[in-house]
Length: 362
Image 1 (tube, rainbow, N blue to C red):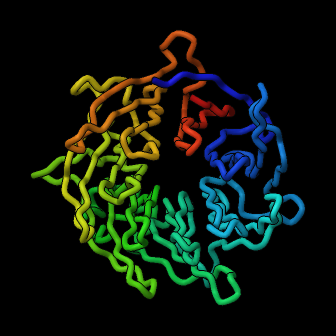
Image 2 (tube, one colour):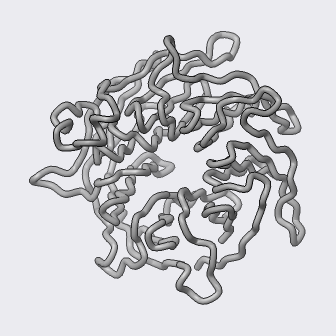
């Protein structure tokens, strides 16, 4: 069962959107103030102590406006941050003590496109390739390290539909939506680097891309609700993959639903289950926005902004998920679960989520 305490930190004075743990370091990215903050863990009553804060437009730093997602390369030498307001991918060098120094930034220009509203980021297992998805450009943007280990823009994959058209009349662009990337919001990658999965809000879909051994990215298919099948993918905002690559799980924000697909050894998906708020005992799962799996893949956690709650599911022997528990602001002695955006399960066995201006550990 989940228990709760909260830790308040005012470094960035804004909504905290991302938190990750690297060894004994916690890395926080702020959406509104545009900063990256690192904290060292101590086994004392105060869980974290500030180590470093890097802010947008200060000391030559750029590309942190509306920072969304951060990834550390496997060798620990570089840190990548996507920023929706700056339409950017910012890269920092990391020293042996985890001190960050600004390296470079990629921003939409005449030679680089696809980063308008950059919302999420994933790295290949070797760190050589970075894949960014963007909300307004509705694109998958690919970067690759050169022989010197420096990331270079490769190309963007997109339908090329203007965002004014995409978000003003979704029905009229549905037939033009060939890739399922409209309003692309989140991305996941298999551990063997064979496939990418993208959840897109305006397409109401999850898109599958295959990756060849030489790094080429090829569109495979998109899955979305149809007249014959309702998966629960309306407003798809988050996608995650189990550690053994056997299941792909998508949060449908607009349908208060979480959809599970089984994935076979060839990468084909088959619908397994849709969890819906108000059915089969599921409670407080209103507007699920962030998903996380336990390290053993036996538990699924959902952060739900509409229900101000964390909802927990346990997986049975048949691979089906059963409602187990929810914690919400309506519970006794529980506060601070409003407007959470993302959820991260750390290997230390704790669940972290980041509602507005707070960090929660459960």
